[in-house]
Length: 186
Image 1: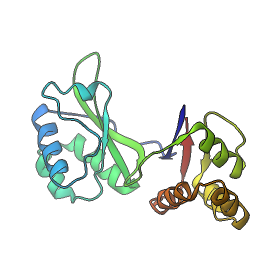
Image 2 (image 1 turned 135 degrees about the horizontal axis):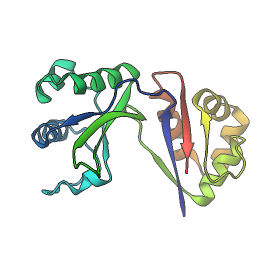
Image 3 (image 1 turned 60 degrees about the vertical axis):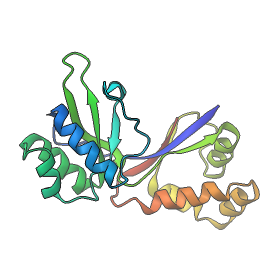
């Protein structure tokens, strides 16, 4: 069994999700893939990946470039602007009732990636940062930073063979461009 750790924003998006066309999605995927910013998404001519949805980085590109891809569609631009302002990804999915392709602001900070730990390593980490054995939960990014930068905690985690985990947590915390972020696990 594994536990996934991921940074998330606690901010509630203001912009409503927007509908995009299949051609706009194709153009965005082609653009993002050519720049190496679409990871873990397989190509499927039937777009079955939309049933589960996927997230994409939006912050590395200019508003004008993205507006060109999405045809200056005001509702999409509102989503993109908010995501960029908050330093968050966007999420694409297919609405089950209407089959519309939607894009909305995600809760995942731009440039952060999940950390997948074995149950044993996850329990060691949770214990070291003072979160006990909760199978799911969250800790504010500031509290996490204090916990993992505490010298005895770092030594404890390093002694437990968790140096790579510490490096990943440090990298996650460096991506926290906004306040109001937390590390969640499940």
